[in-house]
Image (cartoon, rainbow, N blue to C red; front, side):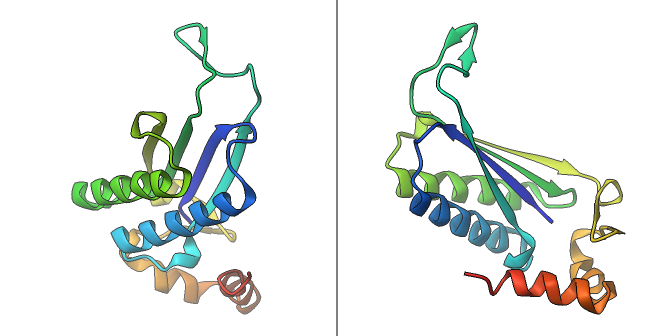
Length: 148
């Protein structure tokens, strides 16, 4: 399951903006990779005031950092499309300047990832992996995509 961690200065993002960003990251991931949107999770962390430094200097500007952890095997073109799409979405939602946004993708070998008690397959085998889950785990996972 791709996991995107969004770090932002404390109180920078409203609950509505967080929801929009999560929806747009999910859309961008699905669009770039072809994976079903229910596989993407987005987690928000707030950076407390006075807790962010660069070069030993306190940073007080409004910044947003998106770090996506995805399965290895995507093409360079897919990763570029994904990063560009995420940045454009965050700009549109927050109104922040491009220089205040940072995005990273870290690739993990599927064999280094366990979800629902099973090692993940290569990207092209996601539907087989989903079908191999127990009925209860599969129903739970599919229900997450329907939650509002």
